[in-house]
Every structure is written in structure tokens, then in C-alpha cells.
Image 1: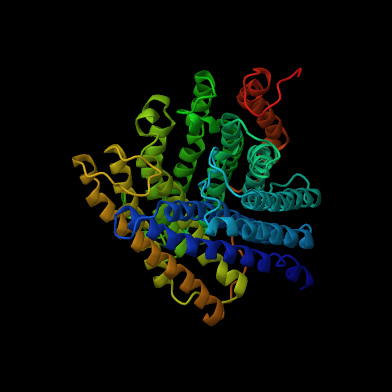
Image 2 (image 1 turned 120 degrees about the vertical axis):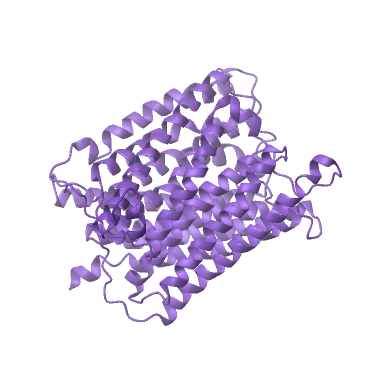
Length: 543
């Protein structure tokens, strides 16, 4: 009995993390509707207010929602799958409060318009130093979670020598290691550039160097967000759908590929920026195309698992199995809808990754539409599905209504398509991104009007869906009936893992490969700022 209580000591921490993320999500959803209303000229125009809103929306979605949900997902699934308590519970709570303190610190300049630098905080845009310090503490707090994930895996392996680490925890650990590697870039930018500059300790910084350092983090952070969604697809969805996981090994290969390949490819975000030679951008482009491979493997494995579930439940024919999948389960439904959005979003991503094609869309609303479809669509809807699945396990209370949850998820997908398809299209029509209004009365701008109005409809639907999510989870927590089954049940692979190669059960080799890959991809591009002698704000070697 004591052991049962022990391995559930991460439940409260997980729930706390989820609620912080969800509250940030609710505020960000309101701000999102404000932005589409302003761009459609349905509210008084204020560029200052608009960009403060955009920055707050981006930080809440890109850093707060994601970081807290990822930590909550990790703590819950690690403890439950390994059947062991948190490695160091007090330290884990310290990490939570440190991360939360960082968010509260950054909130003041954001809400007072002193940090309107987008969630990428690209210089020469400048923010109040409190914002940079708060954002840094948020990242540092997440490193406590990284340490917990790694130590929990190592502790488990000592007790279970030679056994395969449960796939869900293998994925958590891969994500933690990837985040540790990739967050070094933004930490270096903060500590050596933005914070000293904002405090007046240095007069100027090299904008190109700052952007290169941020690119170290910028693309891998997308996979940091995406990892829990993929883990849920592999380890939770197949059983809930009524079947088994098609291949455990395929999951491990995909997680390792995401961990290794996604970090050293971020300079494809700088295709249009000076300061980095085109040859380096070409190398990063090749890596960007390579990182599509684990997503293709995941798509194949997850859909194969769904087909297996559908056929085990009586589905026949080429597509007859689809209707037999247990779509009534919110997590299964969220995965199915996420795959639809990932398919369209992935197509756009291939265009953005290509050096030449990117030039046509780089500074247009196409990019914004693509980003929202992948992140707010594919990633966030699976976050919602995991919340619906975890709430009864953590609280011992049923959801008020699975139908209500399903309706909310459908609304989120339709709202996302209604919002982002016109967003892509007006990008192709030439609307630049990062604009607050359309002050010009020209035939070109008039062609954007209808699409802006459609986007307002999409934004309102998304806000309604977001409110439904919060209400459903809150009611489950306060009024839900007793749930008997509070154990986390993981998908069983078709072919049980009897033995596993060391390279698919550990990370030592892959860490060395990441280190070498990073040196190749970022070593000289960063060093040249110091050895060229013509860079602003850095000290050349020998001086």
C-alpha cells in the first residue's frame, strides 16, 4: 500500500503544472481573438496594444502552456509507468515554483507594453530587463524537470538491469535530453547578450549573433512541444482505441531521430537574414528535411495501430476499420484530429524548409498560418486529449461528459482550419506577417478583407472551444463522479519487447552524436563573429 502511494506522489505536481498551462492557454485564446478582430478593422486600431498582445499571446502559448504541460505530462507518466516516486520531490516542486516565478516576473513588462518583442524576442527589438530575467528563470526551472526525468530513468535501470525502459519514459527522457541541449542556445543569448544589453552593461550587441544563438533553440523547441503528443500517440492511444501498438521499436527509433536531428537545424529560420553564409543555411536545410523522417515513421505506426484497433473491433474492407476505432474516447479522437492537421501542416512545412521556396513565403502570413496549424492545431489538441485522459486518473473522478469533450475537440479542429487556411491564402496574396492593421486602400488590400473576416469566425470558434475545455476539466475536478480505474494503462506492442539493443535503450551514444553534430552545424557560424573582427558587441580573439 505504501508503494502505491509513493509512485503517485507526482500526481499533485502534474495537476498543478497542467492548470498553470491551461490558465495561460485561456488568456492567450482571448488575446488571439482580439488580434483577428483588430486586423479585420472591427476594433479601434492601436499598434502598441496589438504588439503587446501578440507578444503576450506568443509567450503564453509558446513558453508557458507548453513548458508546464510538458512537465506535468512527464511527471505523471514517469511515476506511473516506472512505478516509482519522483526522484527528488522537493526539488521537483522547487522547479515548479521557480518556473512559475519566472512567468510572473515576465508578466509585468508584457502586460504594460514594455516587452513587445514577440515570443522570439529578436533584437534590435528591446524589452525591459525584468522580462528577459523572468524568461530565463522559466527555462532554468524547466531544467529541474530535465534532471528529474534523467535521474528517474537511471534509477529504474539500476533496479531493472537489462530490461527495456518503458517506451513512455524512454520518450520523456529523450525529450528532456533534447531540451537540455537546445535550450543552451537561448540561455547563451540571454546571459551574454540580451540581459547585459537591457541592463545597460553594454552599449550594443550583434543582432546577427543573437539570432544565430536563438536559432539553436528555435526549431528544436517545436519538437520539445511535439514530443508529448507523439509519446501519447505511441503509448496511450492504441489501447484506448481498442488495439495494440504496431511497433515499440519504431517508437524508439523515432524518438532518437527527433532528439538527434532536430537540434542542429535551426538556421533555416534565418534564410532571409544576413550574418550567416548560404552554405551553412544549406546544411541546415538538409537537416530540416531529414527531421521529417521520424514524423513519417510516427504517422505510419500510429495509423497502423489505429487500423489494427479497428479490425480487432470488427472493421472490414479497405476503410471499414476507421468507423470501428473507439472515437468516443477523447484522447483517441484528439490524436485522429491531430493527424489530419499534421498532414496539411506538414505539407506547408516542406515548402518552408526549401531554401528557394521559402523566399516566396518567408515574410508573409503563410508562415503564421503554418505555425498555428502545426502548433496550436496538432500539438495543443493532443495536450487537450491527455488532460481528458489524466484527470480521472489523478483525481479519481470521471469527466462530466465525454460527448462534451468530443464536441470541444471537433470545434477546435474546425476552428483551426477556418482560422489558418485563409491565413495561408492571404500570405500567398502578399500580406506580410507581423502587421497590426491594413491602412492602405488599394485593390490588393481589399482582396484580403473577406479572408480576415473568415479568420474572425475561426478565432471565435477556437475561443468557445477553449472555454469548453476549461469548464469541462473544472467540473470534472469539482463535481465528477467517482472513477474506479485510476491506473495508467499503457499500450502493449503487437510483438512484446523481449530484448532490446543498448542503443535503443539508452542515450550515451546519441549524446556524443548530438555534440559532434552541433559543433559541425554551429561551431564556425558562431566562432566567426569572434574571429572576423568586424562584429559589433563581441570581442575578437587576440584583442
